[in-house]
Length: 125
Image (cartoon, rainbow, N blue to C red; front, side, top):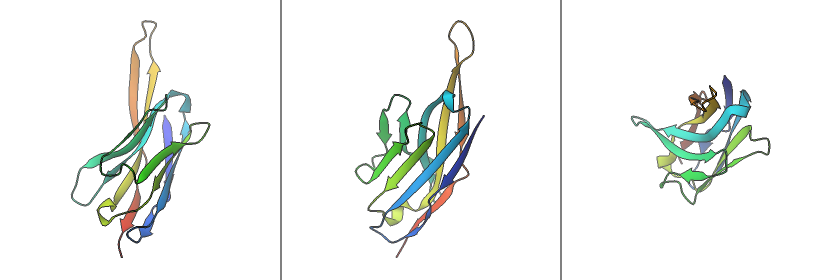
């Protein structure tokens, strides 16, 4: 089990910045990916940014160049620095963790997904 605690959402004016944090606890040694998704009003939950165990990073095209995902050294906390925010960035932001562990001697793996409770980001003047 992995427990996620998010923080950092709020109200910001267009062009402003926010930093989201997500701290993981529990079976952190099994963490394979950490990232952020968001769900706007009447929309589906979509990927914002994700970083793998090896450090590979992927961003949604809509946030590339404005958002930066990073992790702390123990790799138990993931951050999302959001700059030049736009009204269309308004959404509930969810922290996401994928764990992966070997489950038998043949090397089969089991993956599990974990989600934070969500933190609201509102971009409005």
